[in-house]
Amino acid sequence: MTYSDLVNAWIQELNIYPSSEAETLVNWLLEHHLGLRRVDMVRFFEKDTLPSGLIHDFERLKLGEPIQYILGHGPFYGREFEVTQETLIPRNETEELVHLIIKENPGIGNKILDIGTGTGCIPITLFLEMKEAKVYGLDVSERALEVARRNAKKLHAVVNFLNCDILSDHPAISELDVLVSNPPYVPQKDQSEMHRNVVDFEPHLALFVPDEDPLIFYRVIGEKGKSLLKKGGRLYFEIYEKAAKEIKELLEKQGYDRVTVHSDLNGKERMITATWN
Image (cartoon, rainbow, N blue to C red; front, side):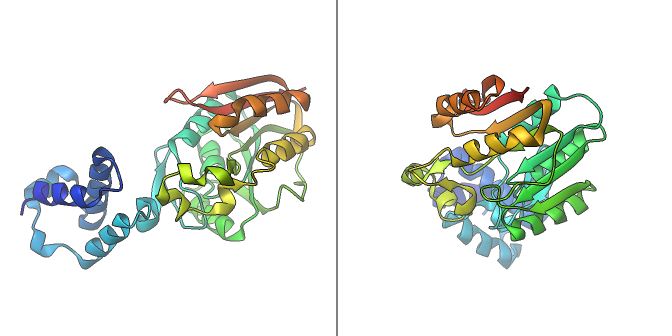
């Protein structure tokens, strides 16, 4: 069996994903275990020498477990971040949110807070990409914060991580230039519309909100943001595409200016920005 034969066979077995996505996952898994680039694997591949861990991990992949959890890391903004099942997997939409913050805040020494930090990918990236930023990240999960702290140490980023339940506590931080959050926003009733590898494996604490109050985090963070942000400070949210209009109206009623909905590269309304004056 050649390398191509194995890839094609495993793509067929990995039928819970579209074939193009399955091919990417299979190649990613093989590269991780064999320590070779794809072009080298085609030349030097020997099926009889496959490590046992590779077969075990492929079985996990067939059950729908995200490959980032299997490998223990995932890419974000050109860097590798540790991920565990205590954290959400960093996604492309969040990279776009980070890029927007960097583009719109080119000054030196921005003071930034990320609420619901998870892996720490947002504040760590902002610290590394911006000039002399003073960055904070908070999360209700202490286990998630442990992952975030390891990521910051590995990537040589200085981020102050805090344990805080934003729904009941008020961070002891003020005069922020930037307040950013990718909070839980999927109503419980929409679980059936989501891919099983998200619902079955990613932390529900970071995903879902009550059907009777789906904007709870946007409302609370928006309200607390008025005392956290300095005059002219900017609020950045990743949002549920189905709720863009409602979130925009909510922030306008709270007194924010220049409330703007932004579409991602797929044309979906996934980000919103606002200014506190």
